[in-house]
Image (cartoon, helix red, strand yellow):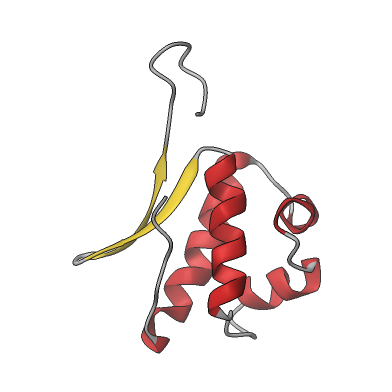
Length: 93
């Protein structure tokens, strides 16, 4: 799993990644909160840019998404999400 290690300028990208990964999984903020251990209010504040997520928070979110088959990553070109699908049954891995 690739965890996002981000400079301060990447905070808006992290907010977009969290919203995007939730949308890909059709998860509510409440469901992500339960799966990650991050408070739903904190998620709402991160997604709207009212709060800068700590590295530990980003890691907990990344772990929850990875367990559901989505990885957050950083490349030289920017940040992104990777949806893993099983070769065997076509399901999210």
